Amino acid sequence: MSTVLVQAARQWIGTPYLHQASVKGVGCDCLGLVRGVWREVFGAEPETVPRYTPDWAEPQGEEVLFAAAARHMQRVTCKTILPGQILLFRMRDGAIAKHLGVVSRGVPSPHFIHAYAGHGVVESPLSDPWRRRVAARFSFSQG
Image 1 (tube, rainbow, N blue to C red):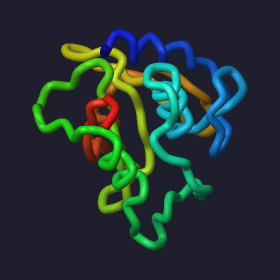
Image 2 (cartoon, helix red, strand yellow):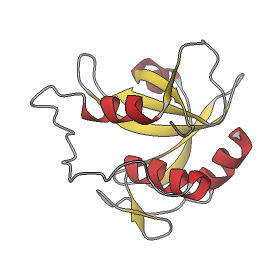
Image 3 (cartoon, one colour):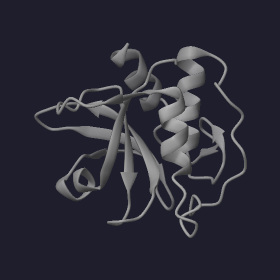
Image 4 (cartoon, rainbow, N blue to C red):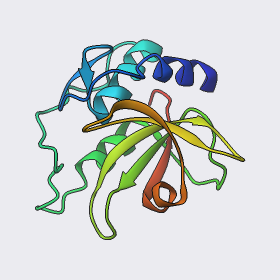
């Protein structure tokens, strides 16, 4: 399954960044990428995504993205970073989690695929600065 997930995510590389979008080759944000991979692998999305702002309710301190991930995926507690896992990031210490990526390559040199403003969908090394921001990992499976 992890190979299928990574192949699906890699097909999105080069898609421009577009807030709230989820259309391969046209535009997406980090959630749109994960939603698009979900649709390609599992079919229909598990819930309708409400409109959201780029700050993901950060001023209110609400863990909107974390809660949604926990509703539809299994939290990973093992230490090993594996291809196909979903990474949830906090962009600052003490802030809410508001960025997602799909692990594309595991140890010894982990990489992940994600979408962010100014870059679109790219594959990046999971460098120490990124690794420090990981708030949780999830198993990308229906449920």
